[in-house]
Image (cartoon, rainbow, N blue to C red; front, side, top):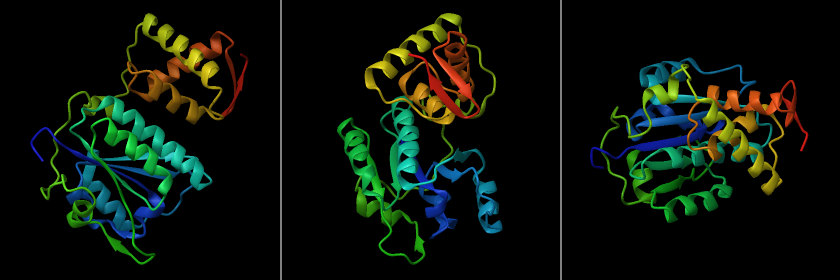
Length: 234
């Protein structure tokens, strides 16, 4: 890997518990762990390891009750990052789910190295450089670095300060409405709508910015919020 390249790893919490996760920090520059909002038990050893990774690890809280929902939410996040990050950043998805293969092919067709790393059996597995290396030769055996890629700063990931112009919000609202009508694929929950807005509006980076778009959609009676559920009026 040259200094401008990075490796991002995506894994569900359930899969992470089945492997020897102590090697996680050595094989990636940033890890996205998708965890059920209802999860109550996290092993202490895992907590200590995550603390050492600091901002190189990002929790993605989900409300997925089945594999299809998990795949949908992970794909949303990966697609969003694909549009934000320079294409020298490598992606690795730790999963036995072949449903990711279409997304992986698309990303590789768009000049981003992306691979799905599979567990060979149900026994505890070790994540190591050789596992990734066997799947995609271009991945090197260099240790992870804490270099922030272009267009994806710590402020993007963790800042709560949002200052969007009214024009940007209005354009994002208009684009979102058009896409919802054209596709007919309308997110059923508030969480999914936020992800939908972020992935389809390049000028938006943060959840708080998506919140502003949703607020505008509600003010203009395009949607009605009932807790986490959404009613579409058009």
